[in-house]
Image (cartoon, rainbow, N blue to C red; front, side, top):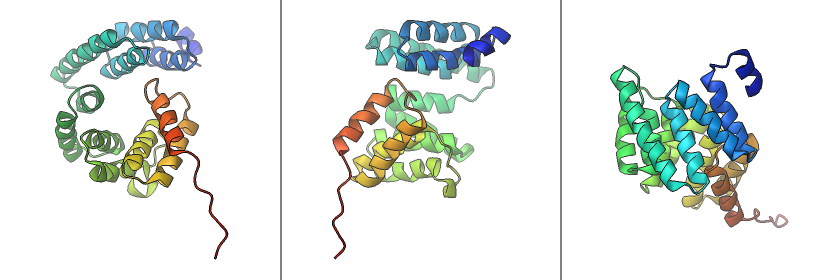
Length: 213
């Protein structure tokens, strides 16, 4: 699909970034890095920069990842100076690769300004990263529960919820949501997929219920 999109329109940056994700999932990391770099050369998107930085990090290339995160901040500042809203991606960056408390502050403002599924997920994750897991679960539930306005089948959102539930000792829901994340997309993130698999291994198999009394 991505290669066809690029043949049709070689300037499709989203297709190149998508190709980067797909190649990374296949373990073709050199090609994945090239696809992301090509996408960023044509469109310096903070979102693509975050994905590329996390791909570097997953490969153990910490210095390259930090360079990419710094470039992301510069690009986001430039985009915001031009009128774009980059608070969400900056919040995600701070939550995982910077100052989680600053991420919470940034994302609370964003939630008050324009609440939505993506912001609920990011704020919930940032709260988890600061240790505020009870409140984190409230936002993670909003992001993933159709009855609460979420329900987008996002592997990353469901992964976040599962991790938070595991931290709170809610092992049944945690096991279910971590498994669901890997079912939705077994390659959703080069950094988070191994974490999801480790967490599931730690949780083990669900207990076998005995016969009713």
